[in-house]
Amino acid sequence: KTNQSIMILTSLSAILLALLCEVHADVYMHNPRGSNDRNCERNVNRDNGNRLFNSQNNNKGGYACPRAVGGESVQNEMGQASFTATDVTTGTTTTFTQSKRLYYYSGSIVPIEWTNQHGCGGNSKVTCEIVLQYACEDTLDPKIDDFWPWVTNKAEVGTTYRGKQHFRDNSNPAASNIAAPRDGVPTDANDAATDTINNDEASAIPNTPTTRRYGMQENFDYYTLCQQTQRNKGLYTADQQVNRNDRRGTRQNPNGDRHGFECPEERDYYPWWAPSPWIDVAVLTDSGGDSVCYKSTPMCTKRCEYYMNNTMNWNNKGYCDVDHSNAASTVATKTNSNAWRSNSWYNNRAACETAGFVWYEISHSDNLILSNTSFVCAHTQFARVNQLGNAQDSEVISQNAASTIQVSSHVIAGVNANRFQWTVPHIPAVKTVPATNYFTDMNSSYMSCVLRLRYNISSADFQQWPIEAVSAGTARMVDHLNNSKTADDPNTPLTQDPYVYIGPGDNANAGS
Image 1 (cartoon, rainbow, N blue to C red):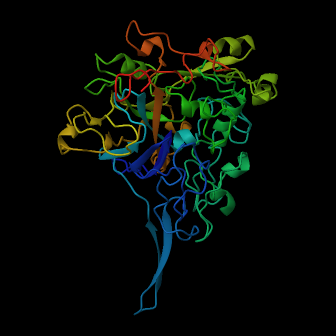
Image 2 (cartoon, one colour):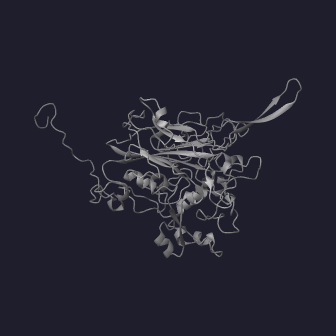
Image 3 (cartoon, rainbow, N blue to C red):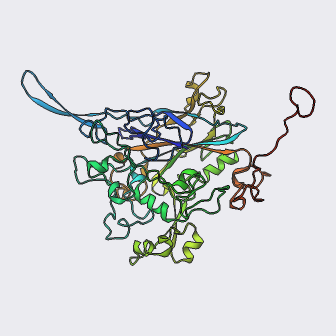
């Protein structure tokens, strides 16, 4: 369940953030304003719940675009609008540009606030994690070639987008339209610009008013890899018949429905086992401790240790590809293979290397310097089931500031929203030499970012975590061995419609 928002991070010796916000499933982000897949509709219900991501939320949730609705002359994707003013004395007309976007300075504290419908924080009915992530243009539309899997037109030397961003439109230097992340710009005052982007390369490049209408977060290349790569078949899918062989098919998305260019397997599972453009900010878990846990914290709970050992911020994620170091290798070797064409591209080292390809492992820290406080694990605040309201006031206010900054001391005691105090990061320094090989201008890449909130909940009826994430003696987690096709399947960990005796009625007579 997800909700998202766009941000801008611009350097002023610090950085500024302008946010596009996303939220997943029965969770509503209120600050910054979570879109719930809205763009510029004026009606009570959103127009399209498949526009950018699968929020699994009520259609009435979310915040529409915070701007006057109109074409690019009213406000373009960068939030700029041009105006003219005429001096009544001299008759001189001056044109000026005004920015209408919301900015956040690096080092400032942004309270991320939300409501979650099904409860959280040690609730006896569910186990829950709140996952906060962001991504900017450098990972959503990367310039770098060999960090990510090769794709058609961005691969070996000689392909069209080698050493370039694949989707940014630079045909008009004055506009230089950003491809990802983008909200989508209406063509006029009557256009809400809420259509789902087409699943093709041309629609992902914002070089016409028609393609600039489409919002895009993850890009077309990322989704292509998702739909061609075999899904993880070791997962617990209960009695769902997953009708896709690839990563589009999950227990919650068995038919592989498309929501923008979001990869369903990545959306439904955290931490994911494959490369992703998302940079982790925080995980708030009901299995967290009373104090926040950082990478350098010596004593964390087992669950927080598990997250620290699996975040892509610092830990490697693998993918299969042709040999990038071999001048004779071409992406066509992959895309023409039977495995690729049958949506069964290799998702593990053994199968990849047996087929004669190369298994690569990468992390975001291969290219970026991310501080030890860039990712934090902490305890969730307690929220009741079916409330969509404030959290219990006795819980720790989680924050990812340096330990010398006591953010929680600035929060007035009493009933508060579900809240995470996020210290806006500085634009990360680039390790790659020269830095322009990674991205031409990191300041510009952080002019457009998206903040994402995920609400991952599981039934408290059975164990759903690997042994590395739980205390000693905990039962084995459910997996593909517990999948079932019928209600009486002996493999299932669940009892369907159990009969439970709750005692006599108004008196002690049996059956009363």
